[in-house]
Image 1 (tube, helix red, strand yellow):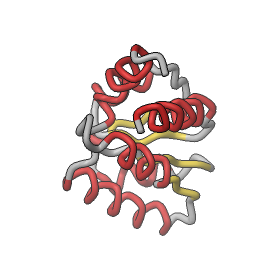
Image 2: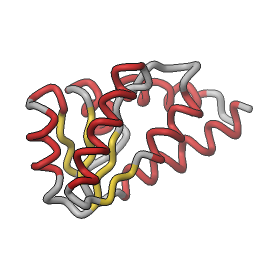
Image 3: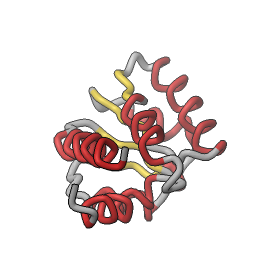
Length: 126
């Protein structure tokens, strides 16, 4: 099971690294974790502005990925952001978050822990 999860996690991390839009995260630690994983695209932190303003700013990008945490607050934020952004006719990726949650929910609580999980999986050498 861990070998399958590691392989899928690597695929998702590659997807993050190759993503050319903007990624929306909850806070600074989330951004730091993504940068450690090699993600270079634009990242907007939700903790800085009201959601409506963030959605308006993000709507200038062609592709938007929402990577909020896996708790109830993260779920609510993802839903609200998706509604705002779909109102702007944006292409919103929530599948990556859903896949990460499926793989990692038992091991981590959110995006800020993703880098540590990646290192743990990698150290197991499947």
